[in-house]
Image (cartoon, rainbow, N blue to C red; front, side):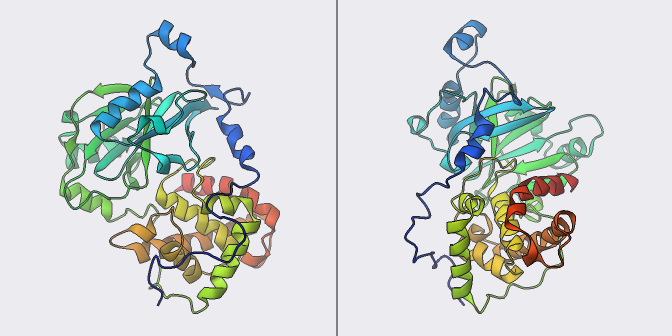
Length: 360
């Protein structure tokens, strides 16, 4: 069995880390404030900030780095009826830093991204109305929620910020703890800016170990699916060669492989695992082969770095990806094999993935 983390893709004349995919500009269009389909959430520029008495994103960033939270520039804007967050760095939240000058806070930046993990955690409440499942869960498991720092989001939800207890500093996030309640931990992030509101300007409290244990039970960020034990594929060299070919020839897989998160609505590490899994499944990779890639080769996912449950998290991603590609195959091509999905159909996969995740 190959020792986890000991394999790197080699043998290519291209640098798979430093060479950007050629069509990156197709992703950058989402960040252009002049884009006619996008409605900026707020004006930008020093004069607007001065006239309206707003803090600049870099000022917000300084506040959070003082607290010890790594930051990165973000653009928050309303597209249609939904607020969207777009990191303005090549590798998204993975470029977060405590060093302010590591980033450009001008241009399209109107908010700051706060990277969770390394001792920081956020509960993301979408529905805080009386009697909602999210509200009832919060009251039951985190009764001290009024005593820690909290922000109101542009969409009317809340981010409740906590420190993590000893032994849980790399706790991952979890989607749908209950209806309309997610969490953001290692591999995740939240945003803050003038379109947000501090509703509890208090020192973040430490989350209880009980809540950490509850969240950890589902922290792989995917639903429970029947999966078997992970068995390393016997054709590792062949898998490496097939993967290398895809990274070199498919710009979308190249972008995901390098950790480029532009265009992804969910930019957590577990979401990167899932997105790459879907693409590999579409090109005929088996579940054990996908899990092998996530556990041994992929540097921007979550499964490889989990202290506990990494193999199961990788297998769950692989199994769900294969099942979803089968469904997408039927909808897009009518093919009888996952391998029959045409290369041009891969461009539509992210939209299908987003729809499937929303349907959960």
